Length: 325
Length: 247
Ligand SMILES: Cc1cc2nc3c(=O)[nH]c(=O)nc-3n(C[C@H](O)[C@H](O)[C@H](O)COP(=O)(O)OP(=O)(O)OC[C@H]3O[C@@H](n4cnc5c(N)ncnc54)[C@H](O)[C@@H]3O)c2cc1C
Ligand SMILES: Nc1ncnc2c1ncn2[C@@H]1O[C@H](COP(=O)(O)O)[C@@H](O)[C@H]1O
Image 1: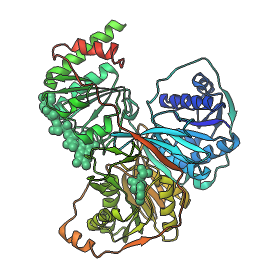
Image 2 (image 1 turned 180 degrees about the horizontal axis):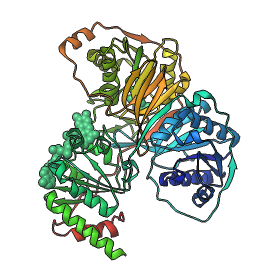
Image 3 (image 1 turned 30 degrees about the vertical axis):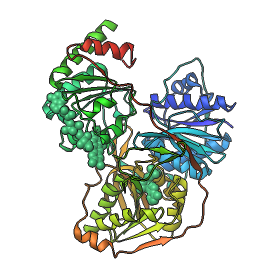
Image 4 (image 1 turned 90 degrees about the horizontal axis):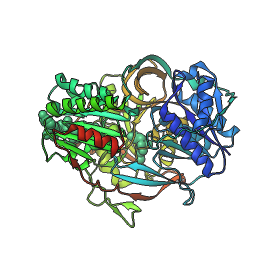
């Protein structure tokens, strides 16, 4: 009956958003009077796996196979289906990210389960099985009800604060009978963005728009991001003009992010831009035009020139960080 | 090489969302509908490019929806699709949509099926991988470039924290996002010829949805922006620490 949750790691180090998914699965398991099992595939240390107990996992099912360090959606589907059958799971959790979104729908088909994507809440069990998600580019929420016994949920990262407790998970090997077709997609070349914080996982983001005037001014954005330990992002025209790489573009047609803090410098706040950032917990807008629409969506606003404000804000953050030490 | 493009219709992004009937549905009166941008700008345009370069011989369009979607389907034909099919069923949950598409496509010999990375209304990104599973074929999600080499596709895809190049034999489902192609505008000739292109309507076998939407909610109105004096950046940092608790 247990709730199972797929865990992602980078070179064996479990991703923070996966700890959140484990905690989410454990809380659901509690509500359903059962336990949570975490599924880890590929190379991961025993230490890392045991520590999943700190986020509520009772046990870890570990699949050892080096091919699983890459995304092979059909192989991961087989792993989750095998684990779900072994554990008689009613609820299967993955993250709502490029990995989970490629795997969870396939698992749902195999198990004849309802799929709820991008969950922002725990399922309301009293109302049947109802989960809140964001719809219409963040302009509304929908409460999705599952109409089947089994449910597959993809959790929107950064939706719940992490709480670490005492606990160790036991580790069990999970044997999975893979087939050749599970590895039909061949990976030829990998380009990891190194050194920077991946935008989709970042808790703090500093973003620039056309008001930055040109790529030569991006040092102002980067310096502030560096002081904060934040990722950098931009509006679409900025990426289109090649001032910044395409993967930094946020909005309706770019990446959707939900950081704790989004600082927008020289961005007007067009609806298509807001679609990608409106889930941010706190928004700071810096714009010289007091009428800029972004101020309506902001928590804090500074009316002024980015070339003056950004260095001052960077200095203030630096001072604050020094005082913290 | 036959390509099938899955398209859906979505409210234009600038639409204001108004709820009605005790928050159980969204008001559609007065809403402008468009082709889901990922389906139109990237999936469809890339397929057309592949056809123009001689790599593909036909580009078909499929939609699961009611007759009110036909103007949007005609627009896809105006951009250059050869023919379209509409499966006459409600476009409700991803499972039933994928089921209908799989049922139709199974014996039609499509090599490449393209869809968008997600629909901008319900943001599921689920139809593509479900369709692949139902057809027992591969799926590459979040593509940023698609090329064809012999009997396989060479796809650049977004991965967690980067990008990679992957190859896969046909048949294959790929979901498209920015990078795959550049948006186009239909020309007059396209609009004229679209009127006479085939748009077949298929009545499917009924299939029960696995999810329903119980209700909707609008986000709470923002409390209003707190303006900070440009010379008081220490105060802003302090508020971010003590009030917003984000640093
Ligand atoms: C279908 C569609 C999809 C789209 N998708 C996206 C998307 O995904 N993401 C996206 O971002 N956009 C998207 N757009 C574009 C969007 O509509 C806006 O055009 C875009 O977001 C504007 O970018 P911007 O705010 O950087 O530039 P602008 O709108 O030009 O705004 C620049 C701002 O900077 C301010 N400014 C200028 N100089 C200074 C200064 N020295 N100091 C301080 N402030 C200054 C100005 O007051 C202004 O508010 C989309 C558009 C369409 C039609
Ligand atoms: N009703 C539909 N008919 C045909 N294709 C659809 C339909 N709904 C979604 N799709 C396709 O599936 C993709 C992902 O949609 P979704 O799973 O709803 O986010 C879209 O970009 C379309 O390519």
